[in-house]
Image 1 (cartoon, rainbow, N blue to C red):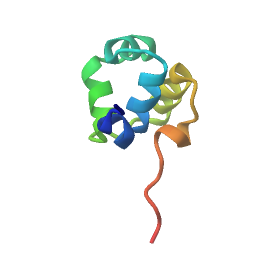
Image 2 (image 1 turned 180 degrees about the vertical axis):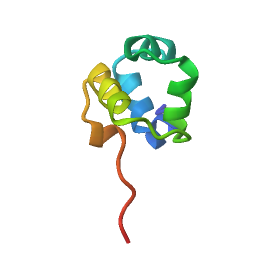
Image 3 (image 1 turned 60 degrees about the vertical axis):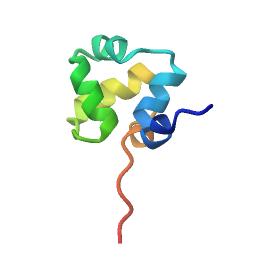
Length: 72
């Protein structure tokens, strides 16, 4: 059964595909696990440098993981 939370979070979906735990991703990019939780929930907008590190660790594009809201 698909994880509904993964569908709502591109970061969580990419992390799941990469078979990484939040702690693994946090260690790979040099942040706390709580930072990864906040990123996945959309509670925290990362710096450009952190966004790039997360994207590289997950083998994904920054724009894929951190999409901009649709312009009105």
